[in-house]
Length: 295
Ligand SMILES: [Fe+2]
Ligand SMILES: [Fe+2]
Image 1 (cartoon, rainbow, N blue to C red):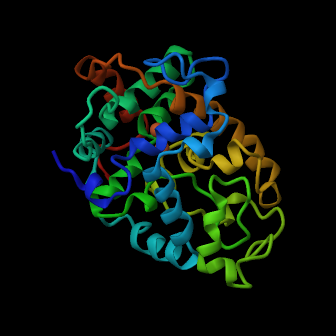
Image 2 (cartoon, rainbow, N blue to C red):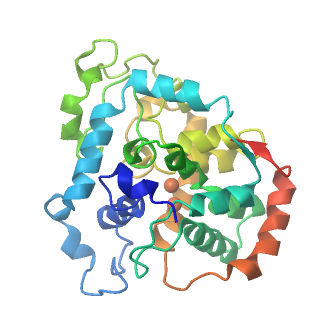
């Protein structure tokens, strides 16, 4: 199995960031870690003291290097979608080649996280496009297979080109981001207008924004919001950056919030039966997508 993930560091694998999210945002009233029920919500009050050094270093790299220039470069490189042509299921299998499965007790392959998310959405009786959004939401992580560093693929996302929100995890690391000392980018609104709408805002580069551009001609708008902003914890969990948003953004973010609980809290050790589930999902994919699309 390809181990690009580890080589890029500092995280042992991409899931380490998502595990960290569950420490920051434990499921209300339920022990964070089903394997260790002693680790209840209360025990994670002192989040910063307990964060793993690799995760902290990951946030430092992310916050210091996600600049306006960096994001513009990545958008130019990827938004033209000229890297590959493949179908959705094919992309899931491609993403799975990324997984470092050295710790099978806690690290399920990416494809299983996608299916656990979509199956939980399906069990709750949500519309078919919602189930499909669950199935696809992390496919943008294939950026790692094209040698993008972890800090440019995963991590909480946030607007660039304006002042950072102090609600962003480890926001003190932004002090070493060159944009903080650039007068164009360091005011509250920076390069934006009040209420301009998130579609006019450049988010830090990662798997969310990339996947939005891959799928924007195929999925309904609430699904696109889920894909594009599911890592934007500063907005959907902390309520920051309201001054950049429209009422329509706020309405759509109700979907992003509805999606988030499936993303964070459906990982389990019950492994989905991929062969059995595949026909249902191939049908669902076929309702919205042609056999191959541009990536
Ligand atoms: Fe994600
Ligand atoms: Fe996810």
